[in-house]
Amino acid sequence: DSGVTQTPKHLITATGQRVTLRCSPRSGDLSVYWYQQSLDQGLQFLIQYYNGEERAKGNILERFSAQQFPDLHSELNLSSLELGDSALYFCASSVTGTLIPGELFFGSGTQLSVL
Amino acid sequence: AQKVTQAQTEISVVEKEDVTLDCVYETRDTTYYLFWYKQPPSGELVFLIRRNSFDEQNEISGRYSWNFQKSTSSFNFTITASQVVDSAVYFCALTSTDKLIFGTGTRLQVFP
Image (cartoon, rainbow over all chains, first blue to last red; front, side, top):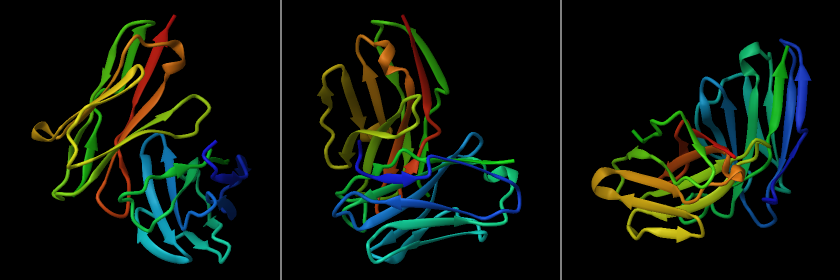
């Protein structure tokens, strides 16, 4: 158990809908990262928050947004969902704002299916 | 730009065979970290090892060993005497500061 909690584990929804994925980092970790894993794109970095502020952005679509709350949990909001958004979404946390010398601890992911 | 290449898409071995998973990386940074993660069928990503760019010592942990060679930009992973429980997708990853760049993964199937 990595200590990173993601909910829900599975989510099934329809095209055009909006969903929210939730992540609670390990106790003491200030950074939260979101990754998307799909069959065609592999593991893609979406966005990072550090202590409530956006720190780095990757291949995140404009339809997607995220935030980190004062208690350090994070939410990833996906809107106007398309079939291609079906993927496994991982949250990871680390102590510091950079990955050196820290390491990422991953949650077990949220499997999103858009029908 | 940073890039991680895992040329082996899938490897199948029989239990007790040794197997090496290749990882080649590209970066212009002088300070960087390399990682290996395991993703078993259950789906979670499990951290295996981190190595920084200044430490080229090979590492052994039980049946696992890692060979880091800066001269060839490679960070290969060997499983000795493979077991069925080693069946998983293995990812090599690279970071210099803010984001972890993953390779496409190698699916290892170990048959009894």
